[in-house]
Image 1 (cartoon, one colour):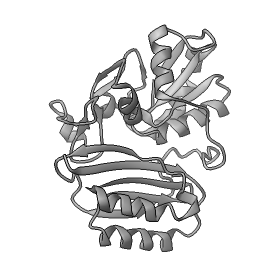
Image 2 (tube, helix red, strand yellow):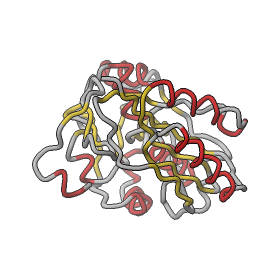
Image 3 (tube, one colour):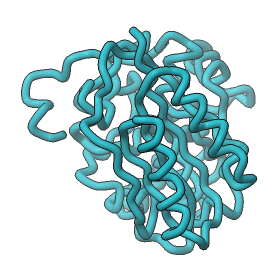
Length: 252
């Protein structure tokens, strides 16, 4: 498989969005890349696909901007480019939560590394002896494709429903370690910060999300595949393209 599929995000304050959009789009088109890049005052969220050399050329160029120097992409492979075109869009948020007080560009929530989470799940508790609760912050059609064993799934139709769902269920997490997770890390980072804001203790986000967990652990304690927002539909634990279950395509 010769096509590199790259996803990455970074919460960082951006104030030159129209000009930045033009520069980024021009560079992507010049390199014949396809995918979607979202830019907002709170940061960047990108999904790109193409041969290795132009992908690496673009990321090297993007990291010359100090605001994006710390981008750490998740990478998977496919036979074909799973995007039909290249889009760079300006948004109010790179992941919509509609909670202005949550500002990940200011400070990150604590994160747990994939291999550490794998160890916690295998031993049945964290390193302080607390029970671990996995919290899926994705939408219902994504969790239908796969999720961690015994994870809390609020059957969200939109991430904007998360604050209300967690407020109604916060007693569940008392005295426990909560690990929020999502596909690549962006939603679970906002979710973890919000949970901290409302007073839930011992909250972590899964560093790098499901894709990084698959890469580093082989998907231990995971059931099914992982939904992705491109023409592959999903990836399996080896990060190879996987077909969606019957009916999954209608929700894309």
